Amino acid sequence: MSIIKDKNILLGITAGIAAYKSASLVRLFIKAGANVKVVMTPASKDFITPLTLSTLSKNPVYSSFVDEEDDTGVWNNHVELGLWADYFVIAPATANTLAKMANGVCDNILLATYLSAKCPVYFAPAMDLDMYKHASTKTSFKKLASYGNKMIPAGTGELASGLVGEGRMAEPEAIISFIEKDCLNQLPLHGKKILITAGPTYEALDPVRFIGNHSSGKMGFAIAKAAANLGAEVVLVSGPTHQKVNHNLITVKPVVSAEDMYQEVHKHYSNTDIAILSAAVADYRPKTVAENKIKKKTATFSIELEKTKDILKSLGEIKNKQFLVGFALETNNALEHAKGKLIAKNLDLIVLNSLQDKGAGFGVSTNKVTFITASKDVIEHKLKSKTEVANDLMQQILKQFYA
Ligand code: CTP
Image 1 (spheres, rainbow, N blue to C red):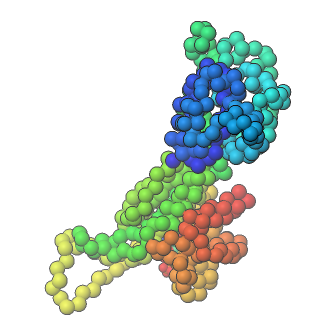
Image 2: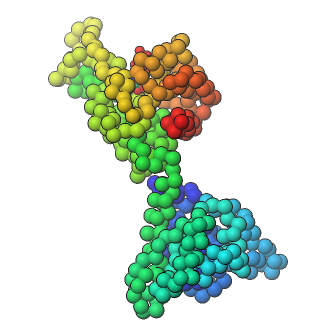
Image 3: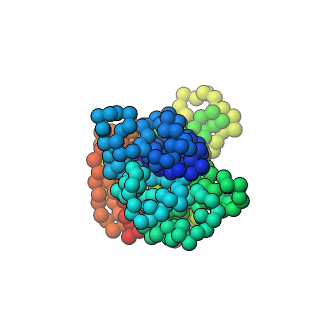
């Protein structure tokens, strides 16, 4: 999933031959899941038609202050357009428009929108090599950088003039990946590695039977998505579940038993910044696993169980830089038990969910949690969707992690 999914992208097009590539750019933004609106300078319409761009973006295209289709003189509100945008991307950006942007000139709707936009602005210059090198253009670049605008550098190659050199607008794919990377860099957990456990574990009894539990994995998967949306690289170690995830920052490591989960988690832990253990790990497993299917011969049948390894506790014991988060599922004396686990397992934060709360627990898509921090702060939340709980948890972690 692209980081620009569901973002509002305002594409500004100016009068350069590279405007013919704007059609591909709009398509790629749409393919990445973004909403696109286009604002053009009047002269750019000689290079690409508004009809092409409105068809591809599925939105009206703006090129003047009044709606040209409508003789009642409807005003195209450049301020609203600027406020709508999460990102304003000017591509191609000609030397003329860049100079005007650098100096606050505001003689068309694109420039008026630029001056009123509060969102991050990217520009992809496109011009002939001598224009690109000119001291005046360089001054524009510098001024725009000082305003916080980000330049997507031009490439080198054959130019419309027939000359070969620097000044070709970056290819649409390169523009998108520049923006995606830049957005990722801004995220608070960019560069951080997060290890998450999710789902149940299955402890084999014989080749066809196991001891398991009702955990659906929903909470752990929601946490993984919330963490990845904050820019973290996530390793999600999951027991058997039907949950699916498609995010380029999440790597799923499927496991079956508590022992498999223990081994997989320890492979990644030393390289982890934050570990969140939400899995419902079996506390016991059959002491022996029958080689063949157990036959029903006797009236009663007992299984001897032995303890599994406590994964969370083992991480608490070797913790150095890691921020460690555990879950506690309690039916009685919940707060007291959860505080006990926080200390016993050397955690920074524990998420308490009580099975007594209606709508909380296994299988359902809601949860009611209380966060308890290492400094014993108790933060209660009301019943929320697991996605909201995951976001609340990540906000709490951010607060403590960067404290
Ligand atoms: N956990 C773990 N490995 C285990 C058992 C539990 O990593 N073998 C983790 C869970 O993922 C959860 C936390 O420990 O984050 C608490 O699990 P819970 O079952 O509520 O508590 P236990 O410590 O197992 O204690 P008890 O079952 O006695 O309440």
